[in-house]
Length: 490
Ligand code: SF4
Image (tube, rainbow, N blue to C red):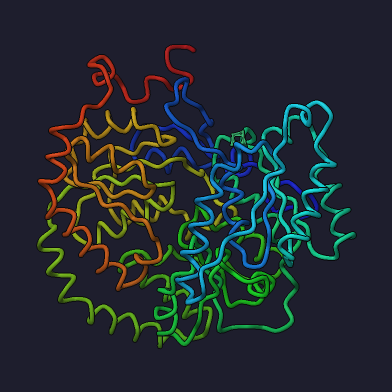
């Protein structure tokens, strides 16, 4: 499905990519059933916790320098502002800049506004934001409440844009709109491409767009090997960097789940190609990534030289790590495609991937290129995965899946989940910063960290001996997918 920039709203992932939040089977079955998008998006009848796609829309738009983000909703929807602020300050330090706070305001919709409408309050808040922060652009993110009462946010932002003379960008992803929380990322990118990306003024064949979560500069040395440089997007980027996305050799990302909508939009609108290779996690995928960049830049021979010399450079330490990790059985827990990156790293470190849990699954990607079929690439790398579960982060399901598999180690992205295996006495490595794990050095970095986690095995055993999980024997003996919507005819 093409990206429709005439429509202010993004098409949700369930419709665009056939995304799902529940599946239990093998990795090969999931690849097979995803062809032609044959799987339905079923929900659980019981959820212990949830996530809001509106929050995921607010994250990227809160991270752009010299802008303000307004959430048009009740103040409770602004609960993640503190987290966004922490991420922005931390990201600026990665860029070598002075940490600063984000500009973020809630319109604080009340019951009265729900009855009489909140458009006037939104206009007043945009003026307030303009006066208070003097931003160069303003984002307005919708919420469940503003969506339900039908406030015409687009009319307000277009009017304010004329009044203030700066871009005012509507980002539409009410929390109830999609079961797939990453629809929020797409909504943010949709608004950014509609209003902030400028047409190319020169051909920049030395710069690669990198869509990620921070601007930690690990792509600098890796791309530097080919004489190229990264443009980190969109977190902590300047408005100039955002505007120049249309001028690049290619677009790549730290994970297909995060980046393919923006990459597709740039390819469709400006002809910037999406890199047709898996992201550079693990040795083999980094080889493929550099090779494809070399092809696009006309540097095929140089790429082969770099790959050979980098492999040689890391070989002694990599072999040592592999010897220590050989035969250990691992599970990954991560948001869809990033779990495949973790599996690629695990496999290159000599670990055996026995199971994977993805928080959702996209049956296709926006650019439906076989080379970026993340799950297929992953299985091609790690072999068959007999237990592949798609589960929207529910700890009660995770407990039963891990009880059944009894892995030696868990690799996880998303902070609170590693506490579950820890309470079960299973060591887990949490990946807080994706960019640290890219390329050849990222592989060694992951290996060293995993060895350190394993050395602390007694620590999790102690935790397990004192922790009591709140599940009954009935649940512990039940199918982890017992509460799936269509089970038991309900
Ligand atoms: S947008 Fe909806 S789901 Fe998200 S925090 Fe607000 S009320 Fe909750």
